[in-house]
Picture 1 (cartoon, helix red, strand yellow):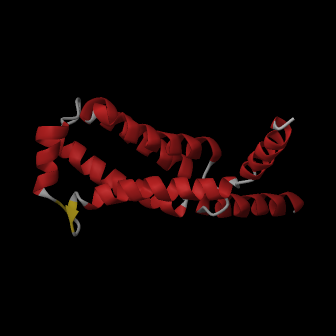
Picture 2 (tube, rainbow, N blue to C red):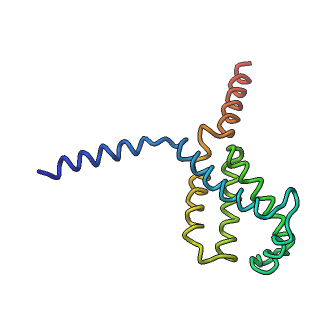
Picture 3 (cartoon, rainbow, N blue to C red):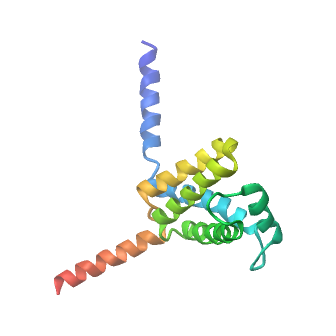
Amino acid sequence: MMLAPACRAGRRLIERLDRIPHDLIALAARFGVAAVFWQSARTKVEGLTITDTTYFLFREEYRIPLLPADIAAVAATVSEHVFAALLAIGLATRFSAAVLLGMTLVIEIFVYPLAWPTHLTWAASFLYLIARGGGRFALDAALTKSCAARETFAGTN
């Protein structure tokens, strides 16, 4: 008998939690992982110049296979800046999340395999964004809405 009120309370709580909107979750996921990659990118540069330390780390510590260290350093630095910024504003969200998920996999497999709990956390956000998109508070949503309006307008002419 005592279990029924607890079950009802638990069900009500779950129903409330089920109403957390995708838009809020996507916004948190976008900003969370974008901040991580943006901060990492900023450690690789001074102004607009990639630091000697960055090149050194890619040569001596990171050692990405099949890619020369200097190219890997530039590619990682540019990618972290560009795709973190795109995620933050919600432009090309799914693509940006996929690129950063790929970077995360490379980091996990070849650079810091023991950091899997952190990388798995990032991957969960990226997978959510790839599957569900950036949400209503992303530029992608505004562009999609604009395209839909143009298609509707074009269809009426």
